[in-house]
Amino acid sequence: MITLAKKEVMSEEEFRLLRDLIHNEFGILLKGDKRLTLHTKVSHRLSILGLSTYQQYYEYIMADSSKEELYTFVSHITNNDTYFFREKTQLDVFAELLVDIKQEKQQKYDKKLRIASLASSSGEEAYTLNIIVQESKLFIWGWDMKIIGIDVNRNAIQKANEACYTKNSFRLINDNSTAYIDKYFANEKGRYFLRKSSAKNVEFKLGNLLDRKTFEGLHPLDVIFCRNFLIYMSDEAILKLVKNFYDALSDTGHLFIGSSESLIQKTNLFVPEYQRSIIVYRKNLKV
Image (cartoon, rainbow, N blue to C red):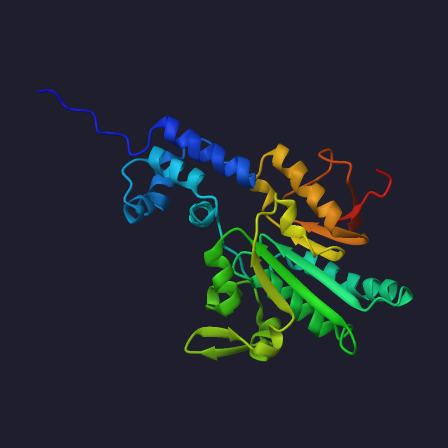
């Protein structure tokens, strides 16, 4: 009895086309043979668009000058798992830096504070930073304060704008910090809605961090948070990314990346400063 081989859901060539597309556009690396994973996440798009092969899907994306389908595609493959008050030591250092930032700005008669949460996912980080700034009570009277969240995933941006979360988003908040939940959120049957007063300084937008146009109008940023995103990128893409960070930050700005990530020996655009047990990066003004 002859058994016919089962047709592959995605050929190696089709996978290569889509893998390289994601890397070239967004810098994201799909390591190893992720054909089945990719098929599982985006096969429904073929049905919706009436396409029969991934070759056709690739050609459809490339022919779409609006890049709508490109962003739909990447929205289905990015990881959006995050939560409030992630990596607390970094946040404690950020809270301490706010004092120095205010003093520097007052000396320059500058009353604007700009903070970016990049690869912002569903907004937990951006809103965490806003809560920390509000709790500091340093930027109240006469200050123009804004936190900007940017992500390639339009579903995540929509959720961030809705500002409605479940208990899973607060999984690292201990008993001593539960007052934050009561103060900044309204609990309606297990759904936590951020109070409007806590969201008014935060905005989100869809954007590709490798595209310089994404950063237009943001300079000068005082602080950039881009945590646990570089681990998904190639070294080549990281260099493009940090150049955009360098150009967007003020000369006295601060860059926070994930605790498992490092720019040391990867670029000379930033120099590390050791604070507590973490590294905060500053612009190298000598390059």
